[in-house]
Image 1: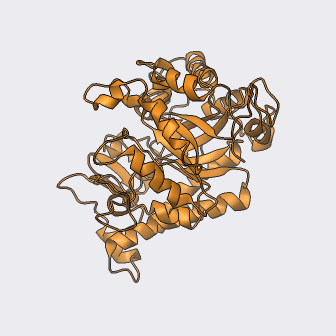
Image 2: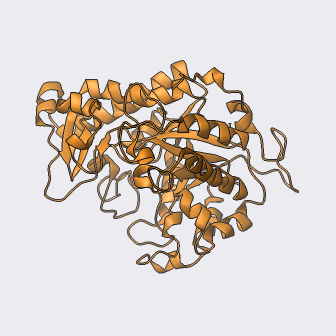
Image 3: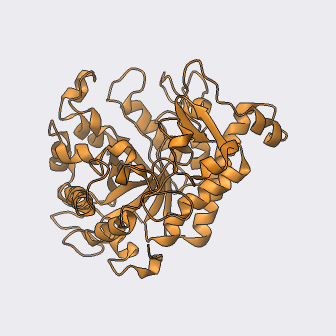
Length: 410
Protein backbone atom coordinates (compact mmCIF):
# COMPACT_ATOMS: atom_id res chain seq x y z
CA UNK A 1 0.00 0.00 0.00
CA UNK A 2 1.13 3.53 -0.70
CA UNK A 3 1.95 5.49 2.42
CA UNK A 4 -0.64 8.27 2.74
CA UNK A 5 0.15 11.39 4.72
CA UNK A 6 -2.35 13.71 6.38
CA UNK A 7 -1.61 16.36 3.74
CA UNK A 8 -2.25 13.97 0.85
CA UNK A 9 -6.03 14.22 1.19
CA UNK A 10 -7.82 16.71 -1.02
CA UNK A 11 -11.30 16.39 0.47
CA UNK A 12 -12.97 18.89 2.78
CA UNK A 13 -10.42 19.85 5.42
CA UNK A 14 -10.84 18.77 9.01
CA UNK A 15 -11.38 22.33 10.21
CA UNK A 16 -13.95 23.04 7.54
CA UNK A 17 -15.70 19.73 8.14
CA UNK A 18 -15.93 20.55 11.82
CA UNK A 19 -17.54 23.92 11.18
CA UNK A 20 -19.85 23.33 8.26
CA UNK A 21 -23.42 22.07 8.15
CA UNK A 22 -24.87 19.84 5.50
CA UNK A 23 -26.26 22.16 2.87
CA UNK A 24 -25.29 25.20 4.93
CA UNK A 25 -22.48 27.65 5.58
CA UNK A 26 -19.57 27.17 7.99
CA UNK A 27 -21.03 28.87 11.05
CA UNK A 28 -24.75 29.10 10.51
CA UNK A 29 -27.54 26.61 10.91
CA UNK A 30 -30.49 26.47 8.59
CA UNK A 31 -34.04 26.80 9.86
CA UNK A 32 -35.68 29.40 12.04
CA UNK A 33 -33.18 29.26 14.91
CA UNK A 34 -29.45 28.85 15.20
CA UNK A 35 -28.71 25.34 16.53
CA UNK A 36 -26.32 25.19 19.47
CA UNK A 37 -23.01 23.53 18.69
CA UNK A 38 -23.15 19.93 19.80
CA UNK A 39 -21.83 16.49 18.96
CA UNK A 40 -24.34 14.10 17.44
CA UNK A 41 -22.45 10.92 16.81
CA UNK A 42 -22.64 7.20 16.31
CA UNK A 43 -20.18 4.41 16.93
CA UNK A 44 -19.32 2.14 14.00
CA UNK A 45 -18.17 -1.09 15.65
CA UNK A 46 -16.00 -3.49 13.67
CA UNK A 47 -15.09 -6.01 16.40
CA UNK A 48 -16.80 -9.29 15.53
CA UNK A 49 -18.37 -7.41 12.58
CA UNK A 50 -21.00 -5.82 14.83
CA UNK A 51 -21.71 -2.94 12.43
CA UNK A 52 -19.23 -3.15 9.56
CA UNK A 53 -18.35 -4.92 7.41
CA UNK A 54 -21.44 -7.10 7.58
CA UNK A 55 -19.21 -10.17 7.34
CA UNK A 56 -15.51 -10.74 6.71
CA UNK A 57 -14.40 -11.62 3.21
CA UNK A 58 -16.90 -9.62 1.20
CA UNK A 59 -15.50 -8.00 -1.98
CA UNK A 60 -13.99 -4.57 -1.49
CA UNK A 61 -16.74 -2.89 -3.53
CA UNK A 62 -19.40 -4.35 -1.23
CA UNK A 63 -17.50 -3.30 1.89
CA UNK A 64 -17.14 0.24 0.56
CA UNK A 65 -20.81 0.39 -0.36
CA UNK A 66 -21.83 -0.77 3.13
CA UNK A 67 -19.67 1.90 4.75
CA UNK A 68 -21.06 4.64 2.52
CA UNK A 69 -24.55 3.50 3.42
CA UNK A 70 -23.77 3.97 7.13
CA UNK A 71 -22.36 7.45 6.49
CA UNK A 72 -25.46 8.36 4.52
CA UNK A 73 -27.60 7.14 7.41
CA UNK A 74 -25.67 9.46 9.72
CA UNK A 75 -26.38 12.39 7.43
CA UNK A 76 -30.05 11.44 7.13
CA UNK A 77 -30.31 11.32 10.94
CA UNK A 78 -28.69 14.78 11.08
CA UNK A 79 -25.63 13.50 12.91
CA UNK A 80 -22.25 15.17 12.48
CA UNK A 81 -19.65 12.68 13.75
CA UNK A 82 -18.79 9.00 13.45
CA UNK A 83 -16.51 7.03 15.76
CA UNK A 84 -15.00 4.37 13.51
CA UNK A 85 -13.38 1.37 15.19
CA UNK A 86 -10.05 0.96 13.41
CA UNK A 87 -8.07 -1.04 16.00
CA UNK A 88 -10.51 -3.38 17.73
CA UNK A 89 -8.07 -6.09 18.86
CA UNK A 90 -4.39 -5.21 18.39
CA UNK A 91 -4.97 -5.17 14.63
CA UNK A 92 -5.56 -2.48 12.02
CA UNK A 93 -8.01 -1.22 9.41
CA UNK A 94 -5.17 0.53 7.61
CA UNK A 95 -1.74 -0.66 6.41
CA UNK A 96 -0.08 -0.35 9.80
CA UNK A 97 3.64 -0.98 10.24
CA UNK A 98 2.94 -2.05 13.82
CA UNK A 99 0.11 -4.57 13.66
CA UNK A 100 -1.53 -6.90 11.12
CA UNK A 101 -4.61 -6.31 9.04
CA UNK A 102 -7.79 -7.11 10.98
CA UNK A 103 -9.39 -10.50 10.52
CA UNK A 104 -12.77 -8.74 10.43
CA UNK A 105 -11.98 -7.54 6.90
CA UNK A 106 -10.92 -10.72 5.17
CA UNK A 107 -11.52 -13.51 7.68
CA UNK A 108 -7.80 -14.07 8.20
CA UNK A 109 -5.67 -11.75 10.28
CA UNK A 110 -2.74 -10.29 8.38
CA UNK A 111 -4.32 -10.68 4.94
CA UNK A 112 -4.60 -7.42 3.02
CA UNK A 113 -8.11 -6.54 1.83
CA UNK A 114 -6.58 -4.85 -1.22
CA UNK A 115 -7.67 -1.35 -0.24
CA UNK A 116 -7.29 1.11 2.62
CA UNK A 117 -10.53 1.29 4.68
CA UNK A 118 -9.37 4.15 6.92
CA UNK A 119 -8.28 6.33 4.00
CA UNK A 120 -11.60 5.69 2.29
CA UNK A 121 -13.60 6.30 5.46
CA UNK A 122 -11.94 9.64 6.24
CA UNK A 123 -12.43 10.85 2.69
CA UNK A 124 -16.08 9.82 2.45
CA UNK A 125 -16.96 11.09 5.93
CA UNK A 126 -15.45 14.50 5.26
CA UNK A 127 -17.22 14.72 1.91
CA UNK A 128 -20.44 14.45 3.89
CA UNK A 129 -19.25 16.98 6.48
CA UNK A 130 -19.01 14.28 9.13
CA UNK A 131 -16.16 14.24 11.59
CA UNK A 132 -14.39 10.90 11.80
CA UNK A 133 -12.64 9.83 14.99
CA UNK A 134 -10.32 6.82 15.02
CA UNK A 135 -11.69 4.47 17.69
CA UNK A 136 -9.08 2.17 19.23
CA UNK A 137 -8.92 -0.37 22.03
CA UNK A 138 -5.57 0.00 23.80
CA UNK A 139 -4.90 -3.42 25.33
CA UNK A 140 -7.15 -6.15 23.94
CA UNK A 141 -5.31 -8.63 21.70
CA UNK A 142 -7.80 -11.41 21.01
CA UNK A 143 -11.39 -12.28 21.77
CA UNK A 144 -10.64 -16.01 21.60
CA UNK A 145 -7.58 -16.33 23.81
CA UNK A 146 -5.61 -18.36 21.25
CA UNK A 147 -2.13 -16.97 20.66
CA UNK A 148 -1.50 -19.33 17.75
CA UNK A 149 -4.51 -17.89 15.88
CA UNK A 150 -2.77 -14.54 15.53
CA UNK A 151 -0.83 -13.62 12.40
CA UNK A 152 2.68 -15.16 12.50
CA UNK A 153 4.41 -11.79 12.83
CA UNK A 154 1.96 -10.39 15.38
CA UNK A 155 3.80 -8.47 18.14
CA UNK A 156 2.07 -10.60 20.78
CA UNK A 157 3.64 -13.72 19.29
CA UNK A 158 7.04 -12.07 19.10
CA UNK A 159 6.69 -10.86 22.69
CA UNK A 160 4.68 -13.46 24.61
CA UNK A 161 6.03 -11.89 27.82
CA UNK A 162 3.79 -8.90 27.05
CA UNK A 163 0.62 -11.03 27.06
CA UNK A 164 -1.82 -11.95 29.83
CA UNK A 165 -4.55 -14.54 29.26
CA UNK A 166 -7.70 -13.65 31.17
CA UNK A 167 -11.37 -14.52 30.78
CA UNK A 168 -10.81 -16.53 27.58
CA UNK A 169 -9.22 -13.46 26.00
CA UNK A 170 -5.71 -12.10 25.56
CA UNK A 171 -4.52 -8.68 26.70
CA UNK A 172 -1.35 -6.68 26.59
CA UNK A 173 -0.02 -6.18 30.12
CA UNK A 174 -0.50 -2.48 30.99
CA UNK A 175 2.22 -2.72 33.66
CA UNK A 176 5.08 -3.15 31.19
CA UNK A 177 6.56 0.18 29.99
CA UNK A 178 7.47 -1.26 26.57
CA UNK A 179 3.83 -2.24 26.10
CA UNK A 180 2.66 1.24 26.98
CA UNK A 181 4.96 2.81 24.40
CA UNK A 182 4.11 0.22 21.76
CA UNK A 183 0.33 0.58 21.99
CA UNK A 184 0.68 4.37 21.84
CA UNK A 185 2.80 4.11 18.69
CA UNK A 186 0.35 1.68 17.11
CA UNK A 187 -2.68 3.89 17.77
CA UNK A 188 -1.03 7.22 16.95
CA UNK A 189 0.09 5.88 13.58
CA UNK A 190 -3.52 6.37 12.43
CA UNK A 191 -3.45 10.01 13.55
CA UNK A 192 -0.08 10.63 11.90
CA UNK A 193 -1.03 9.18 8.54
CA UNK A 194 -4.64 10.29 8.12
CA UNK A 195 -6.55 13.53 8.78
CA UNK A 196 -8.80 11.98 11.40
CA UNK A 197 -10.57 14.41 13.67
CA UNK A 198 -9.58 12.64 16.85
CA UNK A 199 -8.40 9.57 18.70
CA UNK A 200 -11.13 7.80 20.65
CA UNK A 201 -10.96 5.00 23.24
CA UNK A 202 -13.81 2.99 24.65
CA UNK A 203 -14.28 1.46 28.11
CA UNK A 204 -11.66 -1.33 28.10
CA UNK A 205 -8.53 -0.73 30.15
CA UNK A 206 -7.72 -3.48 32.59
CA UNK A 207 -10.37 -6.07 31.69
CA UNK A 208 -13.77 -6.30 33.28
CA UNK A 209 -13.67 -8.70 36.26
CA UNK A 210 -14.23 -12.40 35.62
CA UNK A 211 -15.37 -14.38 38.64
CA UNK A 212 -12.79 -16.79 39.98
CA UNK A 213 -9.95 -15.52 37.79
CA UNK A 214 -6.90 -13.38 38.54
CA UNK A 215 -5.17 -11.05 36.12
CA UNK A 216 -1.63 -12.40 36.40
CA UNK A 217 0.73 -9.44 36.51
CA UNK A 218 2.84 -10.64 39.45
CA UNK A 219 6.09 -10.49 37.51
CA UNK A 220 5.41 -7.04 36.10
CA UNK A 221 4.48 -5.70 39.53
CA UNK A 222 7.65 -7.13 41.06
CA UNK A 223 9.77 -5.61 38.33
CA UNK A 224 8.06 -2.28 37.70
CA UNK A 225 6.01 -1.65 40.85
CA UNK A 226 8.63 0.69 42.27
CA UNK A 227 7.46 2.44 45.41
CA UNK A 228 3.88 1.13 45.12
CA UNK A 229 2.73 -1.19 47.89
CA UNK A 230 -0.87 -1.26 46.64
CA UNK A 231 -1.14 -3.14 43.35
CA UNK A 232 -4.45 -1.50 42.52
CA UNK A 233 -2.86 1.95 42.85
CA UNK A 234 0.00 0.79 40.63
CA UNK A 235 -2.45 -0.45 38.01
CA UNK A 236 -4.30 2.86 38.05
CA UNK A 237 -1.01 4.65 37.63
CA UNK A 238 -0.21 2.49 34.60
CA UNK A 239 -3.44 3.54 32.93
CA UNK A 240 -2.96 7.16 34.01
CA UNK A 241 0.45 7.15 32.32
CA UNK A 242 -1.04 5.80 29.11
CA UNK A 243 -3.69 8.53 29.06
CA UNK A 244 -1.34 11.38 30.00
CA UNK A 245 1.46 10.37 27.64
CA UNK A 246 -0.93 9.89 24.74
CA UNK A 247 -2.44 13.30 25.40
CA UNK A 248 1.00 14.92 25.50
CA UNK A 249 2.04 13.32 22.22
CA UNK A 250 -1.18 14.31 20.50
CA UNK A 251 -1.07 17.90 21.65
CA UNK A 252 2.58 18.27 20.70
CA UNK A 253 2.41 16.80 17.21
CA UNK A 254 -1.25 16.86 16.16
CA UNK A 255 -2.99 19.59 18.17
CA UNK A 256 -5.91 19.67 15.74
CA UNK A 257 -6.92 16.10 16.69
CA UNK A 258 -9.20 15.70 19.70
CA UNK A 259 -8.56 13.02 22.32
CA UNK A 260 -11.58 11.50 23.99
CA UNK A 261 -12.57 8.48 26.04
CA UNK A 262 -15.91 6.72 26.48
CA UNK A 263 -15.77 4.89 29.82
CA UNK A 264 -18.31 2.77 31.64
CA UNK A 265 -20.79 5.22 33.12
CA UNK A 266 -19.97 4.82 36.83
CA UNK A 267 -16.68 6.11 38.25
CA UNK A 268 -17.44 5.01 41.82
CA UNK A 269 -20.58 4.54 43.86
CA UNK A 270 -21.21 7.04 46.66
CA UNK A 271 -21.18 4.18 49.19
CA UNK A 272 -17.57 3.53 48.17
CA UNK A 273 -16.45 7.15 47.89
CA UNK A 274 -18.33 10.26 48.97
CA UNK A 275 -17.35 11.86 45.65
CA UNK A 276 -19.07 9.08 43.73
CA UNK A 277 -22.49 8.96 42.12
CA UNK A 278 -25.75 7.99 43.77
CA UNK A 279 -25.60 4.53 42.22
CA UNK A 280 -25.17 0.92 43.27
CA UNK A 281 -23.57 -0.36 40.08
CA UNK A 282 -21.77 -3.69 40.23
CA UNK A 283 -18.80 -2.30 38.28
CA UNK A 284 -16.84 0.82 39.24
CA UNK A 285 -14.21 1.93 36.75
CA UNK A 286 -11.83 3.20 39.45
CA UNK A 287 -11.80 -0.09 41.33
CA UNK A 288 -12.50 -2.75 38.71
CA UNK A 289 -10.96 -1.42 35.49
CA UNK A 290 -8.29 0.65 37.28
CA UNK A 291 -9.39 3.64 35.23
CA UNK A 292 -9.56 6.88 37.23
CA UNK A 293 -11.83 8.62 34.77
CA UNK A 294 -12.59 11.48 37.17
CA UNK A 295 -8.89 12.30 37.44
CA UNK A 296 -8.52 12.41 33.66
CA UNK A 297 -11.23 15.04 33.58
CA UNK A 298 -9.94 17.11 36.49
CA UNK A 299 -6.36 17.03 35.15
CA UNK A 300 -7.65 17.90 31.65
CA UNK A 301 -5.64 15.11 30.06
CA UNK A 302 -8.48 14.52 27.62
CA UNK A 303 -10.48 16.88 25.42
CA UNK A 304 -13.83 15.19 25.96
CA UNK A 305 -15.37 12.39 27.93
CA UNK A 306 -18.38 10.37 26.82
CA UNK A 307 -19.55 8.16 29.68
CA UNK A 308 -21.68 5.24 28.59
CA UNK A 309 -24.81 6.10 30.54
CA UNK A 310 -26.55 3.01 29.24
CA UNK A 311 -29.50 2.98 31.65
CA UNK A 312 -32.99 4.35 31.53
CA UNK A 313 -34.37 7.21 33.56
CA UNK A 314 -35.44 5.76 36.90
CA UNK A 315 -33.27 2.62 36.77
CA UNK A 316 -32.59 1.89 40.44
CA UNK A 317 -28.93 0.83 40.35
CA UNK A 318 -27.77 3.47 37.89
CA UNK A 319 -30.33 6.14 37.08
CA UNK A 320 -29.72 8.19 33.93
CA UNK A 321 -31.27 11.15 35.74
CA UNK A 322 -28.65 10.89 38.50
CA UNK A 323 -25.59 10.11 36.40
CA UNK A 324 -25.93 12.95 33.91
CA UNK A 325 -25.91 15.56 36.71
CA UNK A 326 -22.94 13.81 38.32
CA UNK A 327 -20.90 13.90 35.13
CA UNK A 328 -21.98 17.48 34.48
CA UNK A 329 -20.56 18.49 37.83
CA UNK A 330 -17.43 16.44 37.14
CA UNK A 331 -16.54 18.49 34.05
CA UNK A 332 -17.61 21.82 35.58
CA UNK A 333 -14.69 24.22 35.81
CA UNK A 334 -12.60 22.25 33.31
CA UNK A 335 -12.06 22.55 29.56
CA UNK A 336 -13.19 18.95 29.08
CA UNK A 337 -16.36 18.61 27.05
CA UNK A 338 -19.09 16.19 28.07
CA UNK A 339 -21.00 14.01 25.64
CA UNK A 340 -23.36 11.25 26.79
CA UNK A 341 -23.16 7.73 25.38
CA UNK A 342 -26.65 6.43 24.62
CA UNK A 343 -27.76 2.77 24.59
CA UNK A 344 -29.77 2.90 21.39
CA UNK A 345 -29.21 -0.86 21.04
CA UNK A 346 -31.51 -1.48 24.01
CA UNK A 347 -34.59 -0.10 22.25
CA UNK A 348 -37.22 -2.82 22.06
CA UNK A 349 -34.68 -5.50 23.03
CA UNK A 350 -35.92 -8.59 24.82
CA UNK A 351 -35.20 -8.63 28.53
CA UNK A 352 -34.72 -4.88 28.82
CA UNK A 353 -36.80 -2.91 31.37
CA UNK A 354 -40.12 -1.46 30.28
CA UNK A 355 -38.80 2.05 29.51
CA UNK A 356 -36.69 0.61 26.67
CA UNK A 357 -39.85 -0.73 25.06
CA UNK A 358 -41.11 2.85 24.77
CA UNK A 359 -39.77 4.61 21.63
CA UNK A 360 -39.84 7.92 23.53
CA UNK A 361 -37.26 6.91 26.17
CA UNK A 362 -34.22 8.20 24.31
CA UNK A 363 -35.96 11.42 23.38
CA UNK A 364 -36.64 11.93 27.10
CA UNK A 365 -32.90 11.56 27.70
CA UNK A 366 -32.11 14.46 25.39
CA UNK A 367 -34.89 16.54 26.92
CA UNK A 368 -33.41 15.87 30.36
CA UNK A 369 -29.92 16.80 29.12
CA UNK A 370 -31.14 20.26 28.13
CA UNK A 371 -31.24 21.18 31.83
CA UNK A 372 -27.49 20.57 32.03
CA UNK A 373 -25.53 22.96 29.78
CA UNK A 374 -22.35 20.97 30.35
CA UNK A 375 -23.81 18.24 28.13
CA UNK A 376 -22.71 19.17 24.64
CA UNK A 377 -23.86 16.17 22.69
CA UNK A 378 -24.83 12.51 22.52
CA UNK A 379 -23.29 9.49 20.81
CA UNK A 380 -25.35 6.43 19.93
CA UNK A 381 -24.41 2.76 20.01
CA UNK A 382 -24.39 1.60 17.43
CA UNK A 383 -24.50 2.44 13.71
CA UNK A 384 -26.43 -0.65 12.66
CA UNK A 385 -29.20 0.22 15.13
CA UNK A 386 -29.17 3.88 14.08
CA UNK A 387 -29.89 2.58 10.59
CA UNK A 388 -32.43 -0.15 11.42
CA UNK A 389 -34.19 1.75 14.23
CA UNK A 390 -36.55 -1.14 15.03
CA UNK A 391 -38.91 0.78 17.32
CA UNK A 392 -38.53 4.24 15.82
CA UNK A 393 -36.67 5.57 18.87
CA UNK A 394 -33.97 7.22 16.74
CA UNK A 395 -36.55 8.74 14.43
CA UNK A 396 -38.24 10.16 17.51
CA UNK A 397 -34.96 11.73 18.66
CA UNK A 398 -34.48 13.30 15.23
CA UNK A 399 -38.05 14.62 15.10
CA UNK A 400 -37.95 16.02 18.64
CA UNK A 401 -34.38 17.37 18.82
CA UNK A 402 -32.57 17.39 15.47
CA UNK A 403 -34.57 19.68 13.22
CA UNK A 404 -31.32 20.52 11.40
CA UNK A 405 -27.71 19.48 11.64
CA UNK A 406 -25.58 21.14 14.29
CA UNK A 407 -22.14 22.68 14.35
CA UNK A 408 -19.32 20.81 16.02
CA UNK A 409 -18.32 22.42 19.35
CA UNK A 410 -15.08 24.33 18.87
